[in-house]
Image 1 (tube, rainbow, N blue to C red):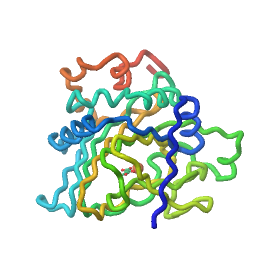
Image 2 (image 1 turned 120 degrees about the vertical axis):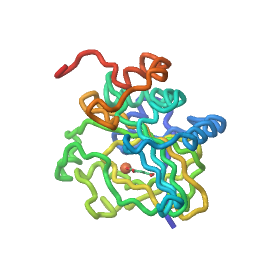
Image 3 (image 1 turned 135 degrees about the vertical axis):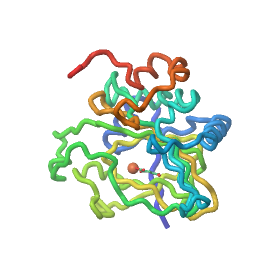
Image 4 (image 1 turned 45 degrees about the vertical axis):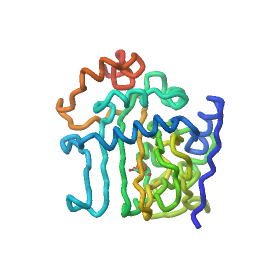
Length: 267
Ligand SMILES: O=C(O)CCC(=O)C(=O)O
Ligand SMILES: [Fe+2]
């Protein structure tokens, strides 16, 4: 029986930031209500994929073994997504963690159907690799370069393929490279409700797991980073263009998160 990850809802910003740093993740319950979930899910269903943007659209009908629809740059596809750039209380934690000039380095809509296989355990980004005893030394504080907010849009259960974390693994100083446990802890499942959000730092060992159910899982990923980490808005070399009609609807904070920065290092 898979173990469920402990999900503690801290209400104070200071505690949320500390959880992200020390536990590697922070949990926000009830961020979206059921109407908001329905609208987001139907928008994800409706949008077409754009191969040039590295979107994925695999279905059993087109030769895929399971439904795997991924829409990059979702903020550029429908104005609905703008609010997910600066949704409270997630954005406050991101800004406190990455700095007031932090930005969104990517936003992906994910639809994964029955038959999705297990992902391998991985880190999304390991900024600095260190011997684990050094990484665990309390004098060593590795900045949090990148975080991801997962907006779960289903009530999660084991067969639907929850995200799994190895708790504490951001103190390993490395990526798993085939390991399945760290410091005597193995992976635990994020079993939360639709509308809940988990924000996690990129060094946590984690994976998406197999969907052995008959249901389709909906997930929105919003990636935040320090200003010095580049934004990942494919396609590159000037081929990505903001949709002006959507950009015109963004507030100043959303525009900053999309890259409307004042001058900084190297500018
Ligand atoms: O599908 C998930 O729950 C996690 C996905 C993930 O970790 C990734 O694609 O890097
Ligand atoms: Fe990942």
